[in-house]
Length: 190
Length: 214
Image (cartoon, rainbow over all chains, first blue to last red; front, top):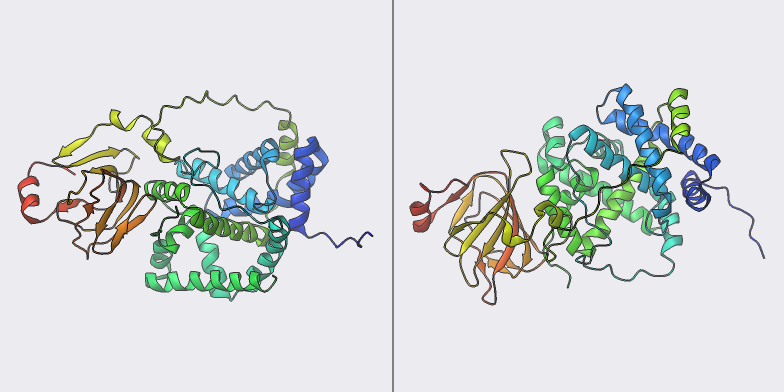
């Protein structure tokens, strides 16, 4: 018995498009993914304080990386939007801070292995991505703004405290509260 | 074996957002290689980044950029540089690559039972060092004017706050005049990131200070 198809959320659509690119180098899928995500990556890059002319170059490099590495995307581990966010983050550190981003290597023999994941992890991840998005949109403004500063404006806790002239403890607790709210929203779904 | 002492939550978030400077990011990332729990936490922070990316007000991308993009899809990617593994196999990535050689080939400065080798990550105010403390030995009493984070890579040490083993992270600030003592059963190897000059206190320190530049 087939279920009536649910309207596809943007998050789920992005996942499908990356899979199509991985399976058959589907240029139409890539075009649709570009239309969906490139304007968001551009917003991310611009918010980091970079000028518009270099922003579009960086967006292309991020999307080219998506095209080339689509086969490495594992939707059971993270949503496509999360994967694209990490590519964009690493690229802007490389290009604008001119630093390396140190990362562990999941294939490193010296890595302490993950605990085995349950079989329904993939379904959970997809529901989580949608729920997380709604929960983020529902955050109180001062928490939401602080998250924006952390993620989109390249500010550490200490830098946020300095910029807003707040005690470091206030910044820590506000971001912790935001994280707790989001965690609770996710647990409501399970 | 899961580490017991982890970097503070705010450090994991600063790492996930990319706001963290490279020396501390190196320490956090190397802890992540040894700690599945913190990897899950950082994965949740990454997922938050993904959600924020989806929620952001999009900015239109020019047609020229789109055309250029579609034209580049058939480009051959640059061949990656041949992977020559020169690092010490006992170190996890990313530290293994940053050290780039067997530990024995680094330039170690020796002060009795304590050896230090500095990693050059480009800054002048933050020091990134590998430290080896001989089994059973107490580090010279010292304080920091700033903050220090220490990641144990092998062996272990104890101080007033606890016992630290492979993967554990110890955080100290200038309020603490701490005296780590390496475990009896072997040398303790650590990665330490400090944002202030090390000042040795106590008798040992007063003797050494005129001669050492940390």
